[in-house]
Length: 260
Image (cartoon, rainbow, N blue to C red; front, side, top):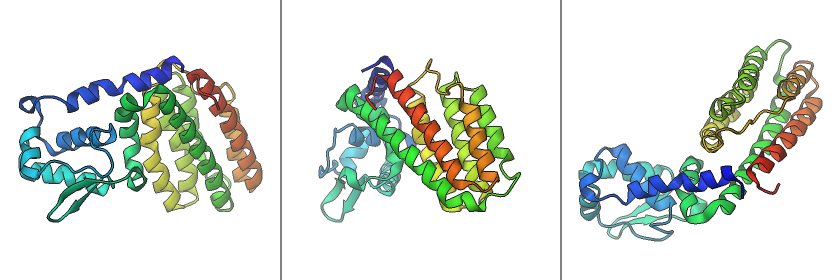
């Protein structure tokens, strides 16, 4: 496994150490308590079906008030991580029930337990999901795009290429380019879905410092996609995007030392 994938693995260590800090050093805000419990659950300290300590005991261990703890538990419940059972405590739910919101934390906290090979495979799978999602979205919105409506998408693609040596900035602008296409089509469900995914890919990008994400043909490829969409040639736009993303993902995975 290449260096970048190992960085993903090592990046979880400080967070897990923080989750194991002594109660005296524990922060007391709901956000901090949420983050610690999130790290413990995603990192495997509490496996599926495990019961969290009783509220009074857990609040004392975390150095938090019980109202603060309840707020943190509420957020964990919203993400599908836990379920409260009246009279029997709080149970950790199976991974299949977790929401997409958990993915960035899974990258941060889960790597220490699962190792670089498994996390590299996760990156590969996320790229595959992105590729399929982007192309399918174009198929849906293509006939809603009008000539001249993709100026914002073109601007974001230009900004992404300018930021190609800064992974987090590149990923942010790259996602905004696709979101601008969906916004031009006034397709809100996909717009919100892409917004939720942007943090996931930003988390991956944070591990890729020094890696150039955009190939030389990035701008030419996206101009071809945008030109085809504005000309009403949806199938050509989908083909161009699929071809670009396939090349991009193979190149990135090779950089990471992950088999496609």
